[in-house]
Length: 164
Image (cartoon, rainbow, N blue to C red; front, side, top):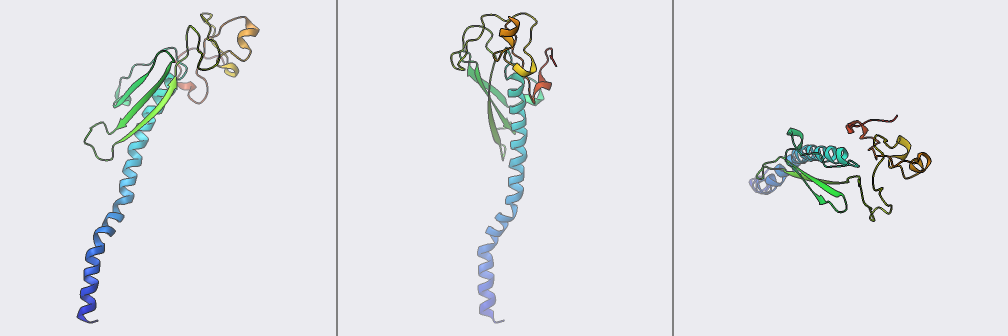
C-alpha cells in the first residue's frame, strides 16, 4: 500500500466513524424508549380499564399512578388519562401515553351513545355477563334497570358483585 491510499482511507474513516458509532447505539436507544413506553402504557391502560363503565372516577394514588393525570367532561362522562414515564421533565427518552374511557351514566339521558339511560337503577341488581348494560333484553325481560358492570378481559379489576 502506498501512503496516499492509507491517508485517504484514514480520512474517510474519520468522516464515517461518528455516523457508524451513532448507528451502533440506535438499538439501545430504541429499546430504552420502548421500555419507558411500556411502563407508561400499562399505567394508562390499567387506570382506564378500572374506570371503564364505573359509576365514578377512581382516585389517582399510589406508585402505579405516578405521572398520570385525568381530564374529561362530566356532561358526556368521557375521560382520558395521560401517563408519562419517567416522571422527571428533564429525563431522557420520556414517553407519554393517553387512553380514553367512559363512565356509566347513573341518571339522566345520554344522547351521545344513542340510548336513554335509566333515571334510577334497581338496587342490588347487576347486569349479567351476556348483557353488560342491560339494554339487549335483560331489563325488559325482568322488569328492572340493572346496574352496568364492566365485564370482559378487565373484569378482574371490578370490585363489585359478579353474576357468573
